[in-house]
Figure 1 (cartoon, rainbow, N blue to C red):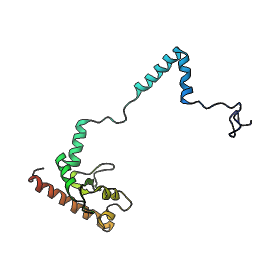
Figure 2: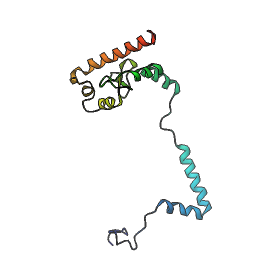
Figure 3: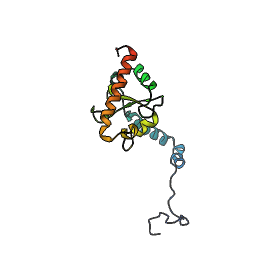
Figure 4: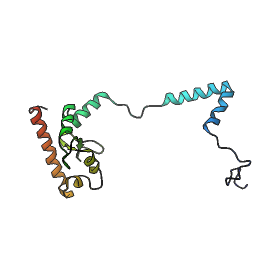
Length: 162
């Protein structure tokens, strides 16, 4: 056995150390109460140090929602509009590419209605060009036109007061 006690094949497991399973790891705890107390104290300390990955500030979350969607009523209204790609309803509130920063949704003025299938296609290789059946060069202009139309429909629906 030239590999330091580790089995080299399936049949060569005589004298090699066994892999510890979860059951074997905890079985030594049951036999010694002092070990149980020590293990629990270290586990509790480790759990006490755990900090949540993301703490949400509710005020900031509310302001971000307002910036991204304006209101829950507007979000629901856009869901009722027909998809700009295929004309189906209901639709998602699809944020179009904007210059508001990396990994940040655009403002509510850049939202267009897109059904789930078209919204998923918009995140694909050619993105909105495939959904809108236009050339990639004209995508920003067409999306801006649809976003302006969505905003105009919202203002007409709510009586010119967002």
